[in-house]
Image 1: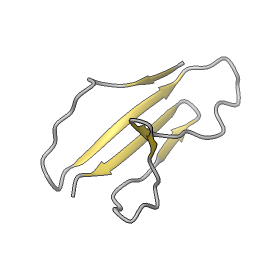
Image 2: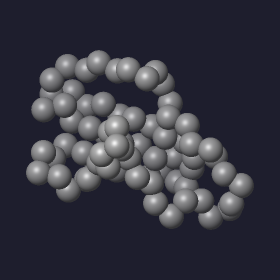
Image 3: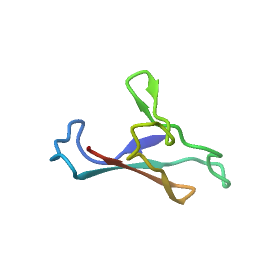
Image 4: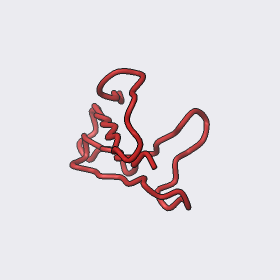
Length: 70
């Protein structure tokens, strides 16, 4: 089971950073081998020309996606 913390809609000012936190609950001990983030049907790429998107994996259960609102 995957859970995104917080509300469905978030508003931030230009130049601010939005941090989306995902918690993964699973029975396997090793955890997921990778986490993919999507905006609608489009997969987010951390090396996009827009920049400002990064991925932080704290452990096998917590993944944080900080996005800079340019």
